[in-house]
Length: 495
Picture 1 (cartoon, rainbow, N blue to C red):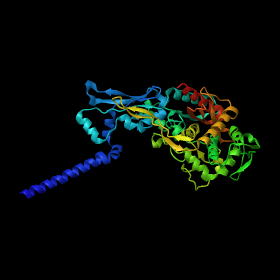
Picture 2 (picture 1 turned 180 degrees about the vertical axis):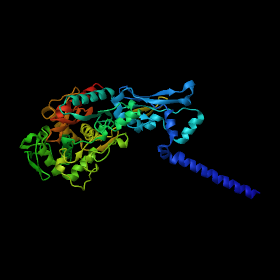
Picture 3 (picture 1 turned 45 degrees about the vertical axis):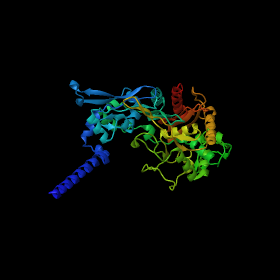
Picture 4 (picture 1 turned 60 degrees about the horizontal axis):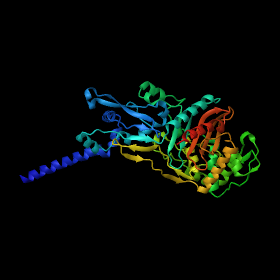
């Protein structure tokens, strides 16, 4: 009799253990996989009943909130929350949206755990038993609403007023010493309030001309043109192979990569030093620098600046792309063993493509004495009880070049702003340091891509900016993109 009881006990114990193991597997070990299944409606229903935290800009402007709907008779089980975006299109990119109908994207996705108060399955069960309600944390972004508005309006104004300007543009502004992203503007944009409407969402996703759902600062790659000469100057000086006084024959028509390279308008500069070459953006000088540095050295410095990898930003991976030398057919980044015309890479040509955030990081690195800080969009997070659970913690990403090298490059960029291709620009912050870029994307039709990267004030940099207009006829970076950048600098100057 005792033996039969023991056997029964063992059977029950085995069955119970199996039950625990099976439920734990789904509840804990494979919870993410289960949640991601399209047929899992339970998660979608639960999401609607959670009051997501608010999203606010660094200057106190409400960007996103959750509004209760339903709950007739005071029954909380019948109440759902719907996301609302008071600033409409201003933050469509990069904040994104969060709706049950179309899931979520942008910061709404990258900060979802904080915003939704997401916990593990066991904690959720305890909350249910105790009768507590799950709530999300409120987050404050590093983005400045006023500067974002200035950037967006300046981009649109430039596109509207520049001959042949079609497509869009973008602006990224970064605090050099913290990595805080203060502006991330993408034009054209979209109103996230409208995406929950099926017809509107379909129209947005199929608009291949304007691509409003693309966050250009992190997702789109462009020929950086002469803004890349900042990287080339830094690599040349930091490697010890060149000095600012190093002279080269900068006549137009120098053979680079086996093919003659011309200067802008075919100008012959003769024998000049590095400062003169950057001030006047002389292609033949910098092409020779790239060739003399060689591919191994040059690409090593590119990687130090962040090229060849996605930005180390707290943002969804599928909304970021790596900058670098790109295979034209596949879009992949070429490795060091694949031949490239490094002389033309050094002047922003060949197959080199860069995102606006990457070029903003180049400027920020020089502004920060040669140290690249990890970029971030999160300023602070507070739980439902008002306690701070996350806050900006500046983190070094890489020691790119020495402080002495950064200082020399910054001095040359000041010369660009005072005497060179950016001499018509100024900012209320003080002395401007910058570099213009005019990438020729259709020589016969005179269609260019206008760039400007820079920082201010040069003696104590507070903000670094990259501005870009995708397409315009006969335009130049200093004339079109430069004023956009300085307006954004001015808007952040009073803080």
